Amino acid sequence: MQGLLAWVPLLPLIGFLTLVAIPLFHRDEPSQKVIAYIGVGSVGLAALFTIIVAIVLFWGNPSESINISLWSWMLVDNLKLGFNFHVDWLTMVMLLIITGVGFLIHLYSVGYMREDLDFRRYFAYLNLFVCAMLILVLADNLVLLYLGWEGVGLCSYLLIGFWYKDPANGAAAQKAFIVTRIGDTAMAIGLFLLFYEFSTLNIPELVSTINGPDVNNDIVTLACLLLLGGAVGKSAQLPLQTWLPDAMAGPTPVSALIHAATMVTAGVYLIARMHPLYMLSEVAMTAVAAVGALTLLLAGFSAIAQSDIKRVLAYSTISQIGYMFLALGVGAWSGAIFHLMTHAFFKALLFLSAGSVILSLHHEQNVFSMGGLYRKIPLTFICFTIGCACLAALPFTSGFYSKDHILLSAWEYHHGINILWLAGILGALVTGIYSFRVLFLVFLGREGQASTHCKDANIPVMSIPLCILAVLALFGGLLAPPLQSVFGVRPDEAHSPWIEGTAIAMPLIGLAIAWKLFRHEQRTGEQRSSLLQFWFSGWGFDWIYDHLLVRPFKFLTQINHNDIIDSIYKGTATISRQMHALLSTSQNGQVRWYLTTFAVGSILFLALLVAL
Image (cartoon, rainbow, N blue to C red; front, top):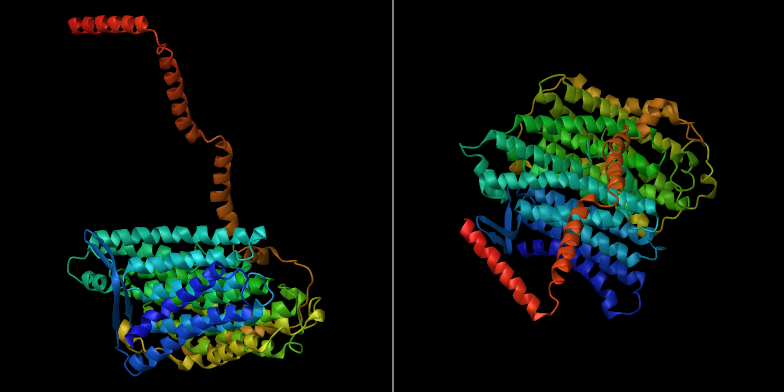
C-alpha cells in the first residue's frame, strides 16, 4: 500500500514525459482526446491512489505517519540526503488538495482549451506543475523540498507565459520568475544557515535537533526569517506580492491551479511544516503574523478597485493567503491548513466560473462590460454565487468555519482585542464588499456591452468540475482535517457571544454595503477617485519598485552599454596581442641576429650579477 504513494508524483511525471516525447515517435500531432486521456488521466490516477492511501492507512488513525525511502540522493561530507518521502496528516491533506482539485482543473481545461493549437504543450506543463508540487509536499528533507519549490517556479513561468506571442504575457511570466527568485534566494541562504548550525537538513532530524539544550536562538530566528522570505515570495505576500496580479496573463485554469492547489500555498506549507522551528522564535512568529495582517488588508482594498474579473480574484487570493499567514503567526497551525483547504475549493470554483464567463463573453474580462448574466449562464451564476459566499465567509459555508477558526485564534493570542484580531475583522468586512461587488457587477444589474453577445460556453467536461467544486465549497467546512498529531492540541477558550457575533456580522455588513453601492452600478469608463486609483495600482508597489530598482538598473545598463567591465578584459587581451606582435619582430630567421642578441643578453646578465 505504501508503494502507491511513490506513484502519486510519478504518474504526473510520466504524463509529462509522454506528452513531450510524442513527436519523437509520431510525426503527426495526436488528437485532443488522446492528449486529454494522458494529461487528465495521469493526475486522476494520482488522485485515486491518494484517496486509497488516505482511506486505508490514515482514516480513523490521526497519528499515522509513513516514511518511504526510494534511493540515496546526496552524500557529500556530512550532508546525507535521500530521495525520501515523509507522509503524515499534513502531507495527506496537501496531497488530497493537489491531486483532487488539480484533477478537476485538468478536466475543466479539456473544454476550456479545446480551441487552442498548443493543447499538448499545455497539458505537459500542467502535469509537470502538479508533479513538482507533489514532490515539494512529500519531501522529508529541505533540499528535496527546495527541488520541488524551484520546479513549481519554473512551471509557473512556463504557464503564465503560455501565450508567449503577446509580449505582455512574456513580461508577466518574467516578473513572476524574477520576483519569486528574491524569496528563493533568501530561502536558500536559510537552508545553508540551518545546515551550518545543525549539520542536517532532514526535517525529522532537524526538528529533534532544535529541541536540544544548546540551540542558538539568534540563529533560529535568522533562519526562520530567511525561510519566511522564501514563503512571502512563493505565496505573494508583502512585500513580494506584485507578481501575482500580473500572473493572470496565463489561461484561466492555470490561474485556478496556481491560486487554489499549488504554487501560492507552498509558503503556507513550508512554515507549517517547519512550525517547531518557528515556535522557538517569538520574533519570527510576530513577523509572520504581521506580514499576514498587512497583506490581507492591502490586497483586500485593492480588490475593491479592480475592473478585471481575474485581477479581483487574484487580489482576493493574496488577501486569503494573508489570513493563513496570520493564523500561522498566532500559532493556529491547524486553522491555517484548514483555511488552505477550504480556500482551494472555493477559489478553484471562482476561477473556473470566471473562465466560463470569459469564454461566454468571447474573452471579455472587464466587469463593467458585463451585467445581467444570471439569465444567460445560470449554472455559472449559481457556482459563482456559492464561491463568493464562501470567500466572504457567510455563515455555514466552508469559508465561515475556517476563517472563524483564524479570527478566534487571533483573539486568543492576546486574550482580548488586539491589532491582529482587528485586522482580521476589518479584512472580513472588506472581503464581503469585494466578493459581492464582482458578483453584482457581473451577474446582476443592467446588461453591459459584452453581455448582449453572451453565449453559454459550458460543456459537460466543464460543468462537472464546477458542480463538484460547488458541493465541496459549500460543505467542505465539515471536513476539518485531524491535524492534532502534527501540531498538537490547543486548549479551547470560552468566548463571549459578541466575539462570535462580530465575526458573523462583518461579511453580512460587507454584503449590504456591496448591494447598496454596486447593485445598480454600470459604468463604461474607468473613472476612479484618487484613493481608488491608488488601490487599483496595488498601493503603488509596482511604481516604487520601478523607480527604486528597475529604472536605476536600466540607467546603469545604458551608461555601461559599451560594457566597461568587459573592456578591462578586452584591453588585457589587446595589450597581450600587441606585445606578442612586437616580440615576434625579433624572430626574423637571421642566425647572426640571434647570436648577437644572445651575446648582448649574456653580457647584461653577467653585469647584473657583478653589480649585485
